[in-house]
Length: 473
Image (cartoon, rainbow, N blue to C red; front, top):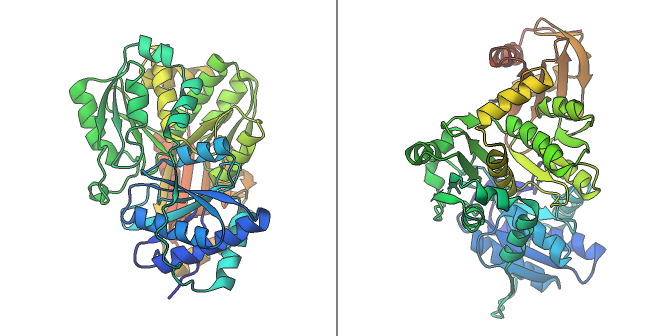
């Protein structure tokens, strides 16, 4: 029995053997084939995968469907990071890629990302077309047996060469840094650690072996999942801990004292650093859910910030058009000018290490200095609300109101770029939106103190759960 193929903010994800089945992979691939052949009858697609359970088998199933329908398939033999596949799409000028990954999701999930010829995540008009084609196609039979080997592609070398052009490895090596890297059993192993060690950085590399259960916790670069990173950092007295998630498109950072550094704060620091060191006095882009620290940095340097909906594809468009110096999302996504229109956790970690080497200061010290320079502090938070269906539907309906006040605070402005964002008179704000990848509602808040940000989040959650509360007006 087939399921509805539905793409979220970053591909189609589902639980293995429940909705993520071979039958549904054949269906999704056949729909992608129809889409790409409508644009180029002689299309070529890269097919890659991460380290998840049955990743190779799903990859070969997709490649068989491509071959049966006249699309040239180039297979990545080894687990390959999403940013590496994106770089290879652009370098080899193919028509896109099918990438089997569920990124940071728990081990029971598998996923399929489709990228177009620009290397970035497929935009909504593309994924909607693929979804519609899947509905019309219905269940697909297995491809006819064919023992001929598939063509292979090895994008690793070209990607690492590109990193050498983007990162100041000379300063990194001269600083004689010692770092801990953690691949969380994902496919970033052999990329971040080797890029650093080959340029004179002392590296302690963790969780580089494949484990389809990801230590039982999933390959998310959360503070909780980086406790092993922290222990190794403190034991080895290194300058920083650097982690990548399951498909290495997200980053996780620990300061020299083992403290987890929010991705939001990393984005502000790196943007400031790039403007100073690269001379890129250009705008930045951030999603509507991302800290306004980037805006404060932009004001400091006389630039601006472009706000996008959640989903890195929107930032990718701006990178591709060379309109921004850097783009970032609070969920630990980052890319820079001249690079791929896709998140790159490997590059992000390298830029953080470079920033520490050049500034010769811990991240906590750099952040305090940045707060002082911009004249304010920024402390964002995110909460995930697992709501009953009736509460979720009621909340979505209530959020259609034009709020003049919310949870006892005067509302300065409303923003419906993605969900509902309300900015208050003191500059603090709250955003409520449904997740595009998981069955929950996300609540994002930011204020000048962590206490106030948590208070706004707590009061917002109470508002969501209060079924008797009248809609504000």
